[in-house]
Image (cartoon, rainbow, N blue to C red; front, side, top):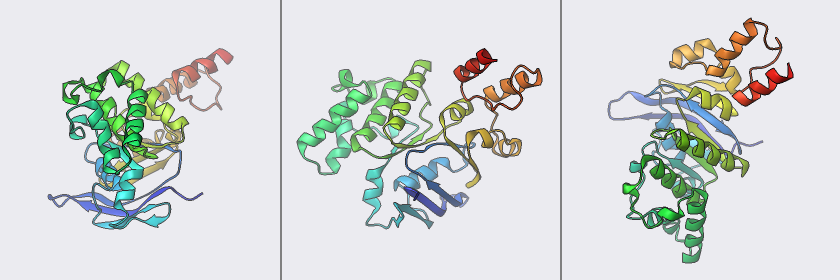
Length: 275
């Protein structure tokens, strides 16, 4: 299977001169759910901005469907790879929610009827129809986050990058976000999420990629990556709580010795009921 999106030896420095990306390579396949992990300053956000075409790497290549993305293809990259910023205020520019969500499709020079259809679909998807005439900057943090996701849905991007999407969300907002992510995944979208929440990464992702000092430190299944004590130590990450609980149960012979650690509390409960 050919990767849908590839980064090859990406390098990027900000004005400080310290490399934000120091030779990052990664293949992304259609339909994956990738948790991008690592401490602040590890290069995760810069990597997302390069994948989306907002930043141009100083060296290295981005490939889309196996074809290098040059200056002329940058617009296509931005259309197919959408990004939701950590701070929604960095993304929101319009005076009403409806105008904000329509901004991207209008820039694609789509017919007016198609823009309206996409806006209505995105607002329905994110349960924002009651807010369509409201100024986005008057909304709560969680509501703004929903608007920023609706922005990308209206673009119909097939690859979605979420930079710390749970930041500023309360527990209800986090639950709503996970439902949206599950629906997007079920629809076949490719999702990459930068997060510090190891419990979320463990239960949600099909793949975990750890960044450290501008490089990819580890890449594999969440079960393998988050069980690697050396990777966690070097990237200043903690083990998921469920792994800690699982080790305690196994030490007391309360679970089958050859069973793999479940990835959610519900899965753990089912396993214990079967025992």
